[in-house]
Image (cartoon, rainbow, N blue to C red; front, side, top):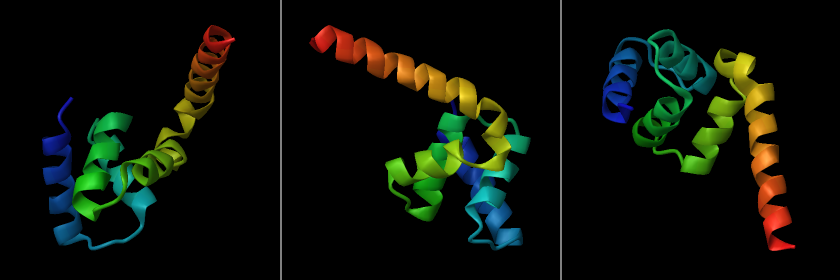
Length: 87
């Protein structure tokens, strides 16, 4: 995982293409091969975005739409396990 490199790439992108369109920023990073976690970290650092906001932006971005269903299923499975453990 290389959040620092993702942030550097994103800063370079924004220097040449200033944009407040977060989906465009995520698409740029995803096209460079960065993971969802790296994209979240880069948005957090470069845009001074709260981690939970960056997570929401990346999770719902068109760049990672192909993963949304499986990520949601994984998240829901974890919640179910936690709830069962607390019962």
